[in-house]
Image 1: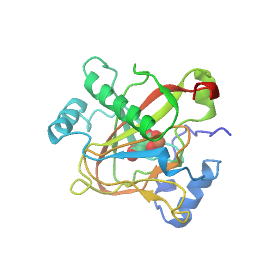
Image 2: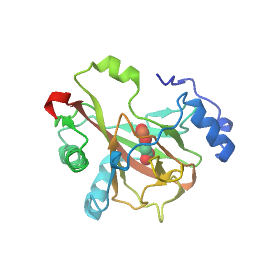
Image 3: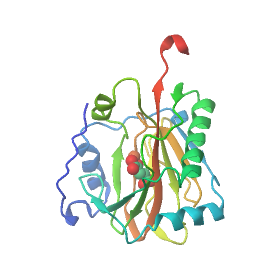
Image 4: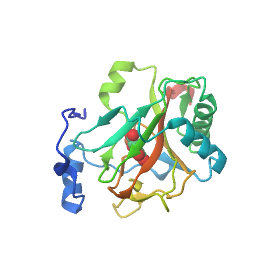
Length: 231
Ligand SMILES: O=C(O)CCC(=O)C(=O)O
Ligand SMILES: [Fe+2]
């Protein structure tokens, strides 16, 4: 099924209160019911970047003032996306992210052929107070159709850049795996943690940010599902 993204900006009011009722509504709004993945569909890498590296990433990104687009729809509100295009300058970050995906792919038997070269920029994203991201899967049919069967997003990468302990409240990344009584699982909330997951499978979201600003780097590694005969 295809997720219909509503590009028209909605008013702030529409997604403001993220209580249980509202959350249910948001899930339904995606048009597809939440499904639960195997736990191996996601891998957490704690302390994947040193403090110095995180500072470097923060410095490069100039997160705050340069938000070039506010992407607003029924699942996400007031995320200011800042897109990096300079692959050469930030090569080490791309490489690190790709390696984390390779590790997750190998250790969890995802069975993808991982492409090393970047196909997308890294997104430096700042969530402001009131922002959230309703449950979704990163790959939709439309992406698959436009890119063809030989390549698609296979591994999603999210790095927590600033410190959840001191810089913001709420804004918890969570996902849906089997064996948690049908509830969401919360990712560790620590700067320097990177999460990698199967981009075409794992439902995940971000709870409402109730205070401060949340900075993450988001990236997708592309690849190809191996044929049955190649496994
Ligand atoms: O902000 C996050 O932690 C997750 C972002 C995300 O899921 C996405 O950009 O698709
Ligand atoms: Fe996502």
